[in-house]
Image 1: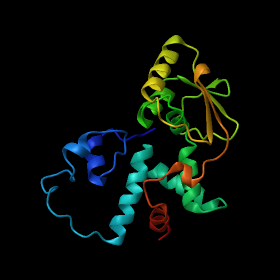
Image 2: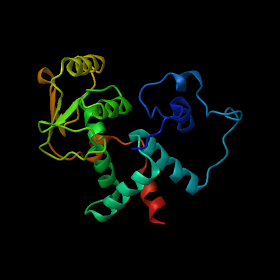
Image 3: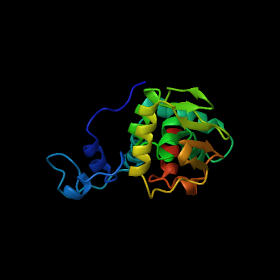
Image 4: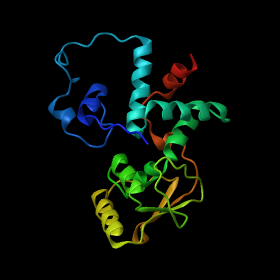
Length: 202
């Protein structure tokens, strides 16, 4: 599966949001990257603003354009508010659930954990980051000592981060459960999803 492997700090600076996890780049250089980054920004068109919102969402979850468009098409066909359904589909990704459970310190690290076979779903190894979890699924760390040591280290590093209510964590057993689908309020999006919906609906 393709993934973005370019410079992360530049992307975060472009949108002025820490899309890939905590970064000091926004403190050191609080302006867009490039030779003209420090100049006064020009007023953006409605299309440019909507495109930026879509790009932020895509980079945040670490998916490519073709896959993102497919998520939108699925969300558009489902019942409910398209923007909220789109968020739910993205949050249901296995790599995101691993990150939300604090088994990883970033979505990119969570994706790597899944790829390398450190994650089990309902007792079976799953190495597909885009695997769509559903309510009732049990996500746990592989019983191998190396896998558990890595997860414990990440849980310690993420101490203080609140586990969302739509998930539950058994930290001692390195196990989590998907209780239900998240609501928009629980996801706390950093983008205006309505602009993304309008962009793809044209």
